[in-house]
Amino acid sequence: MEMSASWGIDNSEEEIAKANYDNVRFFTSPKMTADSEQNNIISSWEICTSESMKYASAAAYFFAKRLQETMKDVPVGLMVSAWGGTPIEIWTPENIIKKDTALLTAANKLTPVSFGPIKPGKAFNTMINPLVGYKIAGALWYQGESNVGSDVYDKNLEALIASWRNLWGYNFPFYFVQIAPYNYGENHFGGVIIRDAQRKAVKQIKNSGMVVISDVSPIDDIHPKDKKAVGFRLYQFSFKKSLSFN
Image (cartoon, rainbow, N blue to C red; front, side, top):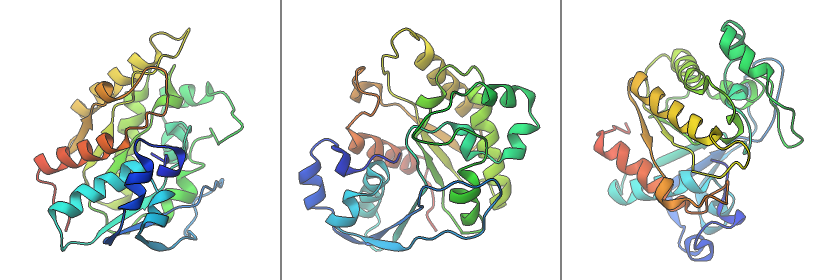
């Protein structure tokens, strides 16, 4: 979800050049962690221009672009909290993980990495909790690769969504992307298991939806560059569900 046009998405120069939408705004959370829940977040709203879009979430941008083309006079605000390569556990409140034996066991199996946190709640505390109470129309989620090897990802996803909705106080729409068919080498079935877990989760979670990108993703790139298809498919799904952005 973090991947921006500056990383080298498909047709990046062309897309950057035409990314000027006065009614689309970005609010990007800085990548930070904390051991306890925080109330403040240092960021600001930016108008979508070629310069701001270049460093914003490409998937979120294309979703908003398509939405703006349909609802020309309706402002679209994108609050982006994303950290590439991180596991779902860091986006879930720590107490939710700790009270579930299966989720805690899976969390304890995560291998430390140099580019991001792995402990439950670390990003939730700083990048999600400060936003609680801010009226949102829905959530977009594109994550899962760093949980390959888990056999409880569907339960993780259900727990995360339930916890966020409980904090916000309403069952806002939650739409996510099934991870790409990347070849994980010796772990032949790791990606398949996560994709199946995502398939199972969407059947259990009300007011949710999943878009598939297997047909537009190569098996040798864990970060597929066709983010336009991702954003447009998320929009198309929400449109079909008659999602209200009031």
